[in-house]
Amino acid sequence: MRFSPVRVRKKMVMRMRNVLSHFFLTFWAALFLWTSSIHAQTFETVEDALNAYNRGDYETAFPIFSTHAQLGDVTAQNYLALMYAEGQGTKKDLTGAMKWYKEAADQDSIDAQYALGELAQKGEGVVQDYKAAAGWYNAAALRGHLNAQFQLGMLYADGLGVQQNDLKAAEWFRKAADQNQLDALYNMGVLSLEGRGVKQSNREAINWFTKAANAGHRDAQFNLGAMYFNGEGVGKNTKTGISWLTKAADNGHRDAQFGLGMIYYDGDRAKQSFDDATKWLEQAANQNHARAQLQMALLSARGEGTEQDLIAAMMWLTLAQRGGIQEEQLYAQVDELLNEEQRSEAIRRAEARAKTNMVLGPN
Image (cartoon, rainbow, N blue to C red; front, side):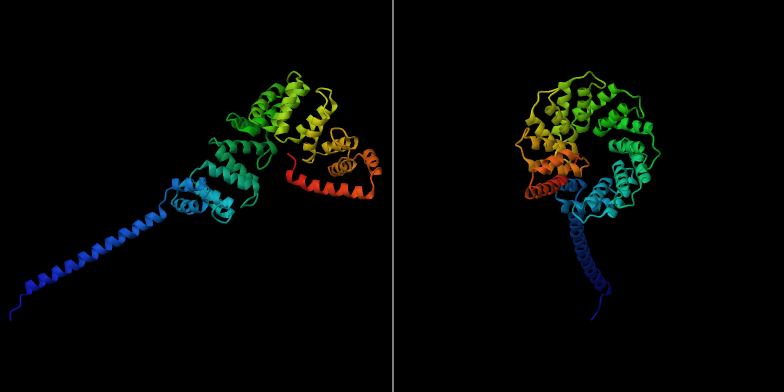
């Protein structure tokens, strides 16, 4: 029997080629399936995460932001930091928030710089450090970040983390006000009224307060109402003054509520109305306005704008005393007319009202 080495070798080579071809086909098929699986699992886009976040699906958004944040996407880093800070889709972790805000800030994200300033100012996730806050705010403010400009102005106005400087405060407030930042508009009015960092001008104060008031700033509405009512920086105008005070009062400004209550109670500059007086005074009293509480005690004791109620009068007197206003003569007069059970009831009501007022809180 003769052997043919060449032919045998060819068969072996052909068989080996067939084996290798099968191996590579199997390998590439497996690789394709593996990479397709990885792509499906980890390469949702940042836009997908934003859509999930905006609809409140934090559990979906968090891992997608996490993946892209680690890949260096600055938007993902900012949102991941925010989710750590707020505990959205994960446990609240201010250290994690600081880490990712710094990653984004290192890529010149002004939103991250501002957020780091806020955390440093409030002492959240880091020791409170106004100097560091000023540094972060300054970095963002120089590049036009609206709220950073305002907060930097506040630090200069109060001398926190920087040397107190009204000129610098006015400079930064003005930059923010020129972009219609509401609190900056109001603060420019205050600086103009007091002559801090800018020339004193009631007229300029009126202009700034008007811009802020028209945008719904209740402190500006109150100041504007008071200035029109008293004729400061503008001609005295009772109707316009009351109009602005009413807007502020409707927005929960307790001093405006008290002021309106007294205007309607006195009846000197507006038609006297005990009903309107009681309405506004009670709203202010419910926000721990001690003078309004005293006035409510008077109304309750006299039955003006409300039914006479000596227990309610004692309740309001008790609350006013806690707020630092003593009216010993009225207290003695009311106390004399109450029995022990009624006094206890007045104290019980005062305690209950105080708890409610703590929830409402002063503005």
